[in-house]
Each structure stands twice: as structure tokens, then as C-alpha cells.
Amino acid sequence: MKPNTHLKKLLKIDISPDSSYSDIEVGLSNLKRIIKSTSQKEVIRGGIRKMGQLFHAKNRIAKSLALKYLEKVSKHVEEVDTNILHMFYSTDPRISDLAVRYVCVFSRFFKNNDIVFYHVYRTKSKYRRDALQALILQSPRYRAYEKDFGVGDLDLFENVRRNAPEEYFGRLALPKLVELSSMYPCLVRYFKFTRKFLGEELEKRDRYSQGVLHRLGKILGVEERRETMWDEFLVCLAWMKHGRFDKSIRVLERLCSLEISKEYKIIFEVFIRKMSRRLDSRDGTARKRAQITISSSFEIELCGLSQNSVYKMLFRLFKDGVKYVDSKSRKAKNV
Image 1 (spheres, one colour):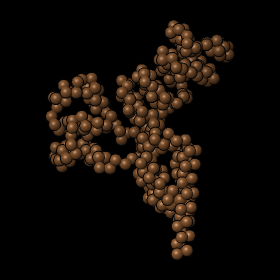
Image 2: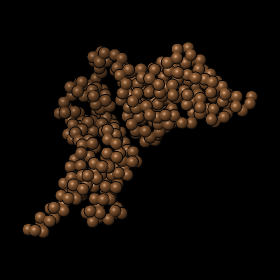
Image 3: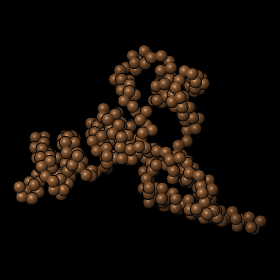
Image 4: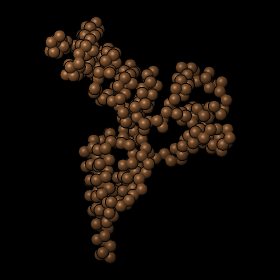
């Protein structure tokens, strides 16, 4: 065949999300045939792009068909559009299912994407387990979750969803219920376990494994201290405004140690240096860094503000803090 034959065929295929089911499937089938029969990179990319545009259309049927054929040519895909967060917020659970399937098929493009991992974890999709396992295989940082999201645990949780809770939990002994509550804290309220009861169970070291005891300790810790990293960030803003730069630096350093977007880290580092210079502390001093942890929830809160807004807000509060400190020092001199 002539080198441009496949390209001509590709250009002739025009698929619209408003077309009938059969027309869309015929068009996608032709695209798949062209992609698999050519080695020309530009033709392959063009075919994948047409399928991708159909997947991101508003028509759910078109989305479903496009994903079906994208899965068949997934090994030929070199890049995909990873901007699918809006699909997780859809009121139609079938759209959320498509998003989770998309993540499962193209998990290699969502490597280290904490926000997508968070949304897949929170979803109730039937494809959730496969997507979680695919993301865990792609990224070493999620292997810490493997014991919590193992096949056995997920199967067990699926049984909990499918059966009436009373029928399922009524057959389990109390230690098993406590173990389940440690894995799924939402069950603590369902079982009406009190803080005193969980504290007593925590002292029974011979009854539970170390993993269960550790998780129970974390649950009780959350009960005692309800602050999140977002709460700390809001407190940090108040400290900056009143010139308490030493405390603000410590909070921003902790936020920099989180596994969040590099752009936010750069902004935080800028103001750490600004406040450090203000306190006459050298920027290169060895500061003990907290262990890096995954904090998708903090970034999700932070993403409500644009990076430019975060910078402007911190800069305004930093200037307020400088004025506050200067006015205090002037008053002290006058006295």
C-alpha cells in the first residue's frame, strides 16, 4: 500500500457524538483497523485522538463505545487526556464507572496522580478494585495501601455492600467486628462503638494483630485531634498576618514535605525563604524534614484556589505580618 493510503482513510472517517449507535461503532471499528494495520506514528496518533475526542463528548453511549475501542488499541496509545476529574462528580453512576475503567485501562498515564487515586478509592464503582490494583502496580508510593486494599479485603467489603448489614454482621464475633472497624472507620459509628470501648479493646494486645492495634490507635488519635493539614494551613495564614513567622515557617515546611504538586511547593518555599530572611536565619541551615506522606485531601482542598491566588494571598499576609512586626518594634523603641 502507498504510505499515504492509511492517512487518506483516516481523514475520511468523521464520527459525531450525535450519530446513531451503529454509525459510531462502524466508525470506531474502522479506526481500530487502521491503527492496527499501520506503523505510521501520525496516523496512529490521529486515530487515537479521534477516539479520545469521542470519549470526552457528553453522550454517554459515545463515551462507552469509545472506551471499548480504546481498550482494544491501548498498547498503541502513547498519550491520553488525563483531565477526567469532572467525570467522578457526575450524578450518573455510569459516567463514574467509565472514568474508573478509563483509569484502569490507562493506569500507566496516572502514575503518582494522588488526586485520581483518591477519587478511585472513594468511588463505589464495580471497577474500583481492578483500578486500585492497576494504580498500585504502577506506583511504589501506593504499595503501603496494598494490605488495606488486598483482594480479600475488597471482596469482603463487596459482600458487606451486597448483603443486608444485619444479616452479614450478625454472624461475626465481636473481635472480627472490631477488626473490620479498624479497616473501615465508617463502621465505628454503625456498630455504635464508644471511645471507651475501643480504648479497652486496644489494651487487649493478645487478642488482635499489630496491624489492627495500630489502626485502632490511629482511629482514637483522630478522635482526639480533628485537625487536618488544611486546618494547619488556615492557622498558618493567621500567624503570618500577625508576624509570627517562626511558627509559620514550621507549618509551611510540613506542607512542603507532603506529596503535593510541585507548583504549590515552590510557592511555599519562596515564603519560607522570605520569612527566614526576615528572622535573620540563614536559608541553607539544616532543617529536619518530616517524612513525606501522601495527602490527596489537602491538595483537593488547596485546588479550590488557583496557584496564583495562593501566592497573592500569602504575599499579602506576609506584608501584613512585616508591618505588624515593624509597628511593634517602633512602639518598643518609643517606650
